[in-house]
Figure 1 (tube, rainbow, N blue to C red):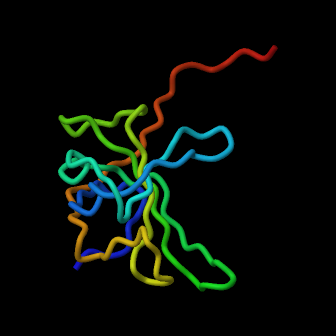
Figure 2 (figure 1 turned 45 degrees about the vertical axis):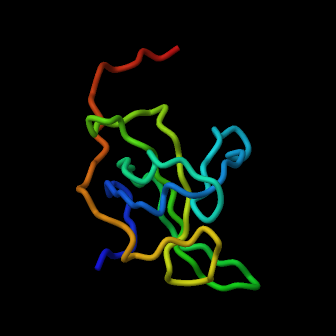
Amino acid sequence: MYRKAEVGDVIQSRAFAHGSSSNGGAGRPPIYLVGSGKGESSRGGAWYVVEEASEQVIESLGRSWRVEARRLKSDGTYDPQGERISFYQDDGIYSWNMVRRSQINLIGKMSVRFVWQRRLRAA
């Protein structure tokens, strides 16, 4: 069984095909909230890389594991403009955009690499 999502996981799920679009919040691009509702079938077969994964505590509902991921290009490479999705995993609160661990396929892992370019001059 798949564990809680971690940053860098490359994942895929048919559950990602259903949901609705939402504004991403202050200064952030729109995000697709996975869950019930109208969907787009290509999302269900696409690969996503987890960019954020953390526990959230909602006072009246308890703890939950929230995940944000970005769609990769069709060849599996990173796309900084790729569509973002958000969902909760099934450890805490019940949420309309909850995706069970058993519904998620772990494809692989990506990592961020920093490359030294040159030292910046002091202004």
